[in-house]
Amino acid sequence: MSKQVPLSVVIITYNEEKNIKDCLLSVQEVADEILVVDSFSTDGTAEICRALGVRFEQNPFEGHIQQKNHAMQQAKHDYVLSLDADERLSPTLTKSILAVKNNWTKDGYDFNRLNNYCGRWVKRSGWYPDCKIRLWDRRKGDWGGTNPHDIVLMNKAAQTGHLQGDLIHYTVRSVEQHINQINKFSTIKAGTLEHKSMAYLIFKFVFNPGFRFVKSYFIKLGILDGFHGLLIAIITAFGESLKYGKAILKRL
Image (cartoon, helix red, strand yellow):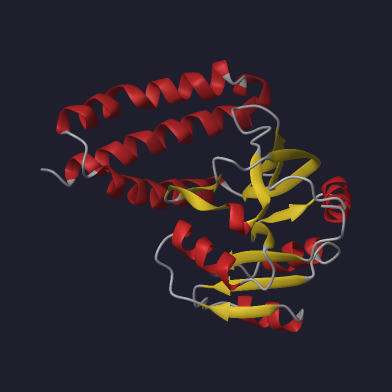
């Protein structure tokens, strides 16, 4: 394909008034349509979106995967770029997307995601390059995975390419936010473990936290991320304890 393709940028939101404006501004140069699908926010998310003139719709939230697939299907164009509200396109990634719109040769494209943790860019700890497919032909793939960790799953015959530039992700702004996030996500994950045996859950509860700490801090070189890397490793390990602990408690 050698002609320019029209691109829909699709974003799901819930109470994202602190993030959504910067996200929307970062995609304006590449978007032929910007669609925000909101889960009935109670803050100023809707007002910000409407003030910026984007297409704004609301849909009940049944899960990250379900909401993102719903949003993708509401887009006007088959070529979609999906972002979360706390993500932005870097200048280099913007140029790469503009170039590929004029010469779309693959079914989907991935790129690196650079995460900001409590004000620091994390280059290790298993958090970078954190490569994601976020730009694709929706006829060739959709959202899958296990909530809340959604991923784009391309069809078996689909071909993908890699784009230069980082997707900027303001993932965690405070330790309190990280702990609250871990607590929320561990509850969701625990609900996906109902089919697992009690022996499996106990084994994971005992050994997974330590393994995740070692992996993040030593194997993935989180130790070179300084104190931020240590915090990430500790809280990640704590999240494993919560996930399997909550799953076990449901059986008792």
